[in-house]
Amino acid sequence: MCSQLTKIWLVVVLAASSVNGSAQDIEPIWDVAVGGVDTVFMEEMTAGEIAAAIRNGSTSVIVATGGLEQNGPNVATGKHNYVLRVMTDSIARAHGNTLVSSIVQFVPEGDINPPTGHMRMAGTISLRQSTFDALLTDICQSLKQHGFENIFLLGDSGGNRGGMQRIADNLNAAWNDARVHHIRAYYEEDLWSYDYLKEIGIVQLPDEKTASRGNIHTDIVYESVMALVDPELVRASTRLANGDFSVHGIEFDSAEAMQELGRKIVAYRTDITARAMREALKEPGE
Image 1 (cartoon, rainbow, N blue to C red):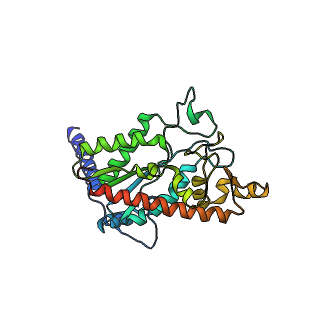
Image 2: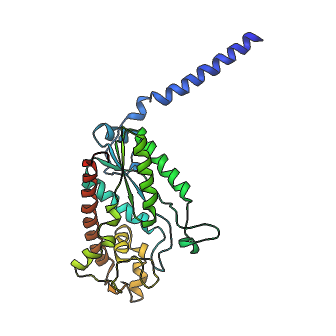
Image 3: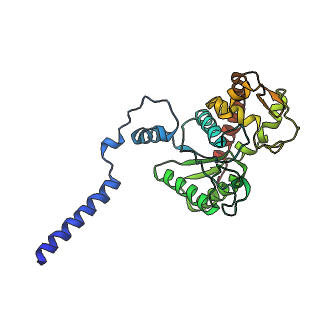
């Protein structure tokens, strides 16, 4: 009986050793990079393609936070996430040797019960601040584990900034072989592209630096970039059919006209962000 128990124990130990070993020594098949896909989004890449990209110098990665919230009667609740899909693709390519982690679609939007902030409107999904902080921390630690050396945090919603800065500070204090950079300029420099829009002759009404006008939580910057993903995310065809395809006093005669503005916004804000990322890499202790 004892001999039989000993044999069982040995089998269990050997099996456990095998599992632990496989976690450290990846079988070659999982490190094969097939390639052939032009993307910077890790969720669209195979494990082997990501490993190869890191080996070949792509040791920078973007972690972007969006949100799911109400945005008025014409704009889909995933506004920030769709904008980030376009913006992070452009920014990663402009910065070079940079991939994009999955966009964090859920963020603090207000208390859940009783509801406050955006949670007062249907469709909003909110996280507790502690949940958001824990999620960002685990994402960053996972990326560091895979060999990324510079992790850039970008937030498309103003309420995300405090948590992102806190996580960057905490991880930078604990790490000495990777850095987390909260790129505040992505959101804060020329807030809502207010000055740039004026330069190209676009003035929303009322003429205020805000992302909400007339109690409608939307803006021409967000809508034009969303239109690059799909004009129906801003209900372009319905608004055109109703004869009122406008955003805070700015009229569009087609979805293509809105997309043209979107491309200008993307180029402008990509330049701002890529420049800020390069500057962050130069800063000692950053």
